[in-house]
Every structure is written in C-alpha cells, then in structure tokens.
Image (cartoon, rainbow, N blue to C red; front, side):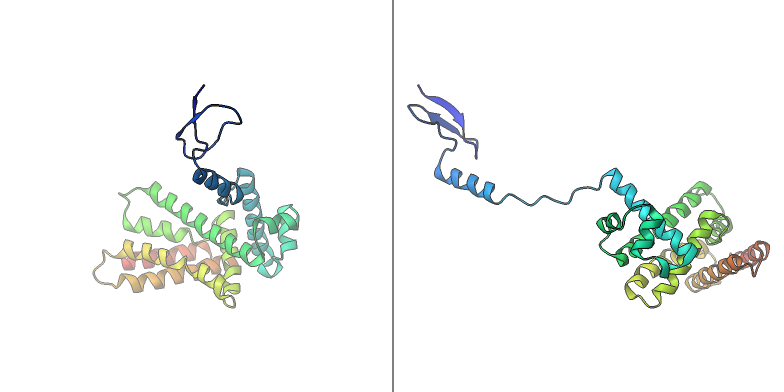
Length: 236
C-alpha cells in the first residue's frame, strides 16, 4: 500500500510503500542538507536582557554615581562598586567587561537621564511659553537645586576631572555639550542683534560655572538667579 508523507527537509510529498523503514527525505540532496544543518546549527543571536539583568545594571550604575559624588572616581574600583551596589565583584564583571566600561556606561546613563528630565520640563511648559521662560527653565537644570541635580553636578564634575586624562571618557563626556548649546542657540535666535551661537556658548559655560559656585557656597542662589535673569533679558 502506497502512503504519501512530506519530506522532512523541503516538505515535498514522498510516496512510500513496501517493506522497510519509510524514507524521511525525498532525495539524497535533502538528506545531505539536513545533515549539514544538524552538524552546523546557526549561532544564536544576542539575547535581550531580562528585567532582572536590567535592574542589576541600573543598581551598579547608580552605585558608580554615589561613589563619584561622595568620594570621586578614584575610589570607583570594581570592588568598591560591587560593595556599594550590594553585589559580588563577579556580578559586576558579568554585566560589564571591565572598570572602564562601567564608567562609560554610567556616564552615558547620566547624560540620557538628564536629557530626558530637561525635555519633560520643557514639554510641560508647552509651545506657547515665552523664550525667556524656556531659557530660564533650561538654565535651572544646571543648578543643584535638589538632591537629584546636586548629585548629577557632583558626578559630572568628577567625570570632568577624569576626562582630562582619559580620551575615550572625554569623547562621551563632551558629547553632551553640543545639544545644550544647540537648544540655547535655537531659543535666542530670534534676536537679530546678536550672534546666537557665540552667545549660547558663553551662556552655557557661564551658567555651568555659576552652578559650581552654588555648590561651593561662594554665591547665593539669589545672586545667581539675578545674573541669569540679566543675561536672559540681554539676549532676548
């Protein structure tokens, strides 16, 4: 009796009948292809990180931020990072290949978080907000006005010192400056009496310096806000 079944390789029909074990393949070619596929299976692609892995990475990154803010990056050894994160050094090394990769990842995460928070604040103001209000909101993000912004400024200051002798770290650190300058340039571009790009460079650098003055306590918040308001009125 003849029975039709499908080739295990190509799916074409096979007519079977008679004695013996029924064939699995329609031809020697399909049989050879199936053998090669079993002998050399394709390499699996990179697996997506699980929620647990993502939380572990975040815990390690936040540990780097705390160490940088409180003790400086010189204290951020793999052992210290692991202790601060409450995990073993093996866990840290599993998620990051080495200490330098940890520092880079922590800086990239900080840039991304700061950018997201600033964008949320600007979007909350709405498109109808006046340029002066927008510019003040941008500059307020530079100042250590709460625990989150204070930590961010301390971490960035620690990274700044390290970036002077670490070219790879410097590339990541300096990559965050241009978007801020571009944002300020766009806000003040309506004033035809100034060069908005040159003014933006000066304003961003100046407010960054004033933020450090506030951190050190050498100037009061009232003095700094008065200075910012003066320059906002001047360029707009």
